Length: 258
Length: 339
Image 1 (spheres, chains in turn purple, green):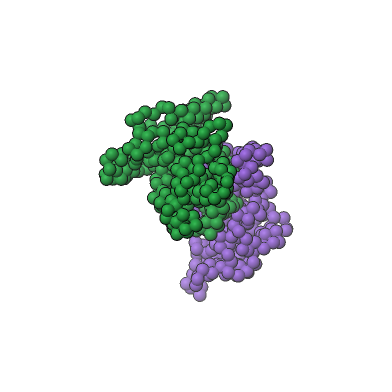
Image 2 (cartoon, rainbow over the protein chains, first blue to last red; image 1 turned 135 degrees about the horizontal axis):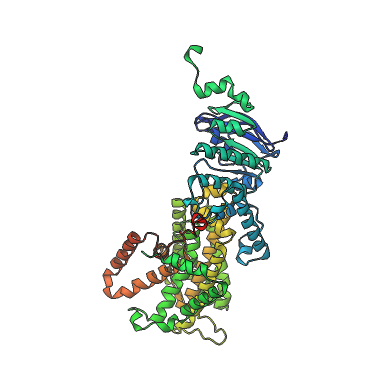
């Protein structure tokens, strides 16, 4: 649990005159659950977007397994082993839950369009294997019974979980979760925390953006705090909670202290 | 309103493999016997029933099925689809009048030319999305037509005359007024296209197209090589359009740039929207109705397009998803299954 798999080095992301990320450096170690927190607009989702290739960093470098992934195509980054969920659910609504996950498992198929058309053995074999794998992932996340239902008709909580199952379908080593507990009630949050731990125990590394402090502090091995695009803390949950700068970022500075 | 789509799909899904084969054979037999089933009451003022089945109905059906891969499956708005039809037709026209190749030898060449054109158009155009893609493809359709109009080596505005009929196959003669033989040949192409689309729909390519149509960014971020699959959709759609073009030229024996106007692209698009975007059975129904109707009501002369327009407007208000919408249903809910 010492080897780091993802490193952000001096990452700066500017949109015109706005600096969304300013010289951010941190790393994620293998099989770690890293919490990424910060007040609204601090740049958390921007971190996800630069890692997954949605934005290209203005300066700095991002390495995954010691290889730079800056400027790589988005689907190639995913194939390399980084998968994400979305803050606002972005499932393929007209597909069933199972089809959503199978589409993600297609990432690692060798057979393409031509062998699918003519039903070559490699295609048939992979179809069968991936269907089983997708069902296995739905069961793993605990939503196996919804496999045949259209994604858009699923209850909200199941949709959030399906996002995680779909991301796992790409067989990542690093899983990025963008506010997976948004809109959850306390008991659902407890369940989700267990699921996240289960995912880690299954061998995945998790980077978690979350607003719910008890959830983040409960599951994370380490917490990185960003505020106004800058990293202000990177430590164990218990230490971060008492960090003066973190408290200031969230609660503001008392007037008499200045 | 009864959901015909779900009713039909329900029967299909409950059937065993043998029953399915019988259902499929039944439909094939029905489609093949259509030339014998009609009567003179189906004749249009410009052609009799047998001829109408070949053009516009069969040709429109092929094109609508091809365009459906691009628009219905992958959600790429292509307004210049007629270009591939024109490329197929012109390939047939040029090669059959200037070389000794016959229609069956030209068919794969025409398909290949159309696919190549799809690739040439797709590589720059598919980097754009939505409205911008529509504008580029619209321009491409016009470029092809205007090129044909202005290059005298391929007939210019006069087009190409004297395209030979296809040679006989197994002793069956393709003569100009033997419409049935053409119809059955075109039907074969239609079945091949249906087979291809159905096959791909349940496999990787179909899922990739579906995910691109619904949320392209999410697809890309979940490892779908979206650009490659969009190109595939374009190229396969083009291949079907090219095949339709070669067959059309060999039936019509005469082609000119006037056959390949923007209106054809729009009409084929209308067939898809009318019938049910993304549903091949709906698309076929759309092509049959919209191919047939404008010719059938020619007796009301000038009011013809007005009536046609009113039918389209009414349809879009009453059934915005088309005659047979794409799949929308749920299999048995898990709660019910447990109870």
